[in-house]
Image 1 (tube, helix red, strand yellow):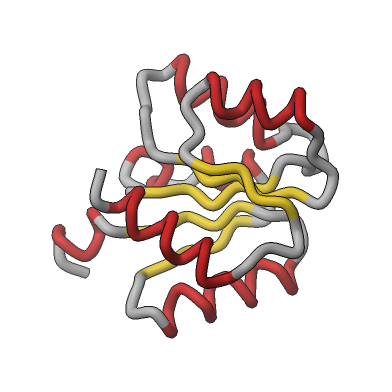
Image 2: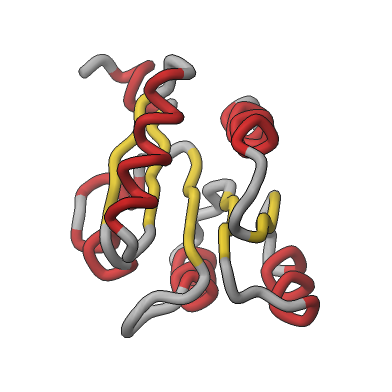
Length: 125
C-alpha cells in the first residue's frame, strides 16, 4: 500500500462485527480505505494506531471504552480526528468527547451520508 493511501486510512473500532462490516462496506463504497478492530486494545496493539488518519470509534466496548482510548491517544500525543458513534450516549458524554477533541458524536442509528461527510472533513484536517 502506498504511503499516500496509508495516510488516508480510516480505523473503525467497534465490538459489533455487523457494525464493523457495515461501516467498512460504506467507506469502501465511497472509495475510502478502512480497517476494522473489535476493541480498543486490538487497535492499540496494531501498527496502525499511530498511522490512521481518522477513527470511527464506538463509545461502549468491553474493557477499554472509546472515551478511554481517546484519552490514551491524547496522552501519547496522537491527535487523530475521532468520530464517535454510540447507541448509549448522553449529553454529558457528548460534551466530554467534544471537549477532548472529537470532531463528531453520532447516535446510532445515524445517517450514513452525514458520517461520510464528517469522515471526509476529518481526512482533510
